[in-house]
Image (tube, rainbow, N blue to C red; front, side, top):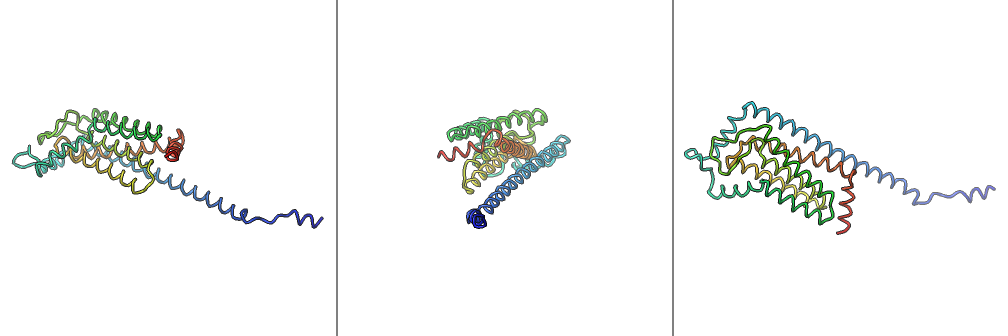
Amino acid sequence: MAVLATDNHKEPRDEDAISAPAVGARRSLRLRKFERRELVWLAVGFAACLSLFVFLKLASEITEGDTTALDTRILLALRDPVDPARPLGPSWMGSALVDITALGSPVVLGLVVIVVVGFLLLQGLYRTAAVAFTTSVTGMVASDAMKHVFARPRPSVVPHLREAVSSSFPSGHAMQSAIVYLTLAAMLMRVVDRKLTKLYVLAVAVLLTLLVGVSRVYLGVHYPTDVIGGWIIGFAWASLCWLAAQWFEVRIGLKEEQKKAKDAQ
């Protein structure tokens, strides 16, 4: 009986001894990834809330007229003191910035959204395309709504070098370009794998947003604070939409859809 008991006792195999630490390591890795993701969500959410606070503070200052003097000085500094109708710089700069400002127009932004959404659809990322389309369109609607709420008149201290008819604050071009370009960049960054490509996509989105905003001030159709307000609220909107997309990953299967699309390539 003693011999049988000894025979029935099995020594632990090497793979059994290794499997327990390996499982623990995998669990620890998943936990670290989860913690990093939660920290990113927290950081983005904090940045969005801070942006909203700064935007409301800026809107309050504008409503009380505290920024008018600074806005006026900046606009006048960009024009010829003898002839305010002539902007500073070479003649080609005005034409170039007229073209650049079109990158933030509803027509161009609408075309960009359609092109990117079409690309996502061709990649089989149907839910991702729906999120990108929804966030871009709702951002444009929010921009128009804010203009009606604040109803700030356009600058009158310098002649406009571009036709503008709506209210001034926040800058629709600055806000909508920030929403569309940053949101679409966030979506495209989730499709590509290489870090350099992700950085390139983000850099292009930020550069386009900055150029559009600067062009609005140079052309005299917006006060600088209009553009700053548009950038701030546009960034906040894009950040909130990014957080919503993260939440929807689990709810509507965005992550699984993206993985399947990559495997099919």
